[in-house]
Image 1: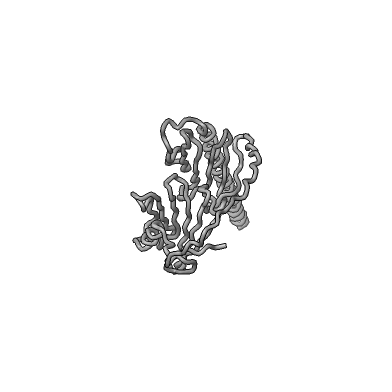
Image 2: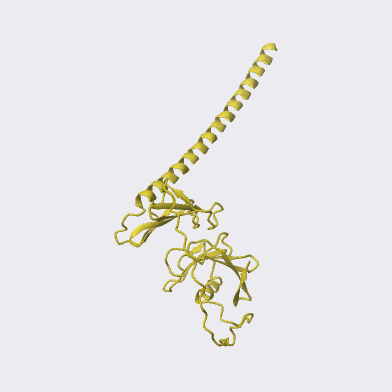
Length: 262
């Protein structure tokens, strides 16, 4: 009887020790996995920085852009040329069709801006590579213009402020609203082929279109970011400086005109 009791105790102790060993080995494996993910992200970030620092300012040899420069197995990196040299880039770390970072080169200095919330709203630019941002010389204020006397210009019918029948919708607006009536797809790239502007439309949930981007002049910089709300509301954010900093907001009223938002 004593032998059986002793044997049972030894088996129980073995199970406890074995369980503890499995638990700690599991924790060690998870910790090692986390470390490998962090290391991989650091390596990708370093690869992007090294690549752009080497490319920026060099001749583009007649090309205007390189799409997915690092290949499909890494982050998505598009590089663009300006005035014959590589001078601008966009980075999509997780390939979700939202640019996480944008880079630019100007007068030998490389700048980087990050969208921490993955929403195309970028924080302040930071200098990359140890360069120093040039300090612009103060520009004297121009003298106030002399306005010639003129008679009031009559406002055509239908264009007066507050008239909902005014021609406030552009061609791009009308096409965008038409696209919302089409069958839902995960994304529609260049839904405006053959036109002077570019539209990309996205569905994040597969049930309806949630957002869109507009490149008014097809220069590979998104001029507008649209949001289609669940209640049917349509909001448009605009980057007036063509730098993907969206500082102006508008709400579509009655499907016919835009109302500025504060």
